[in-house]
View (cartoon, rainbow, N blue to C red):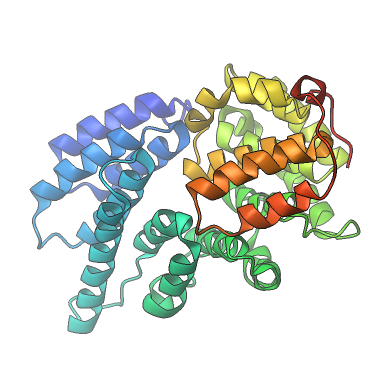
Length: 359
């Protein structure tokens, strides 16, 4: 009932308790993962999975699934090191490869959740992330695996962008991700929105590009169909980013309606985003993680904040990007974007940035 009522915090807590009672219940582990994803309870997810894994033993067939989820949770919660999280994901992949080579199961296993964890852990080292996905992991472990195939294309596109391989990123959106996006699946719409918004922020989306209109039309139809959309902040955030960054009037009206029905404190964050209010966005950063959607959601909000600054004060935006480049030196896109802003002129006070930016 908690999940049906969109009370993701309560659902995550109930699932954690249930998993303690029956650690072999993979369905409960899955529900715990989804609920934690939508409320930012990564520590609870990590702690619960560690206990469950210690109880099930090596003979438990779904153990690789647990290892993939744990790798994701450890990375999100910043528990241990990135090497610890990566080790969990790799162990899950190795177990599946062992299952498949030994013909333990009648059909070959796929393991997109472990591949997903690898993408998250190596986001700060995109070249290594791409190397791992392109040359180490067997594509049969994730290609064609329902929603996660789409979501993993999204991750690979972001890795390509962070390595400044923009032509390849654009082609993967067109050839791999977009054909699988459906208006009845809010997760795939969110993935497509995340990619196009990143294209816009990186200034690689042409003014006459028709892809925003195509995606906008699907969002509007989805919002009419899914009246519960406002109850899930993760989806509202993606719709809001789409509306502002891509300047779609129809999507903007749709986003405003969804935001108006959101509960606080999320409504305040989304209204700040819709108006590109830099000060209000800055003041609400402690809320971003609880929106859900992992560090990727925080990443696009931070990119959006810097973009809003850059519309009025390019040098201030460049300064923010230089700070990010120091924190993540392997993500070369930060320095490239900073150099572009530095070529554009003098800054204005941040207090003047609260009006809707022009493009």
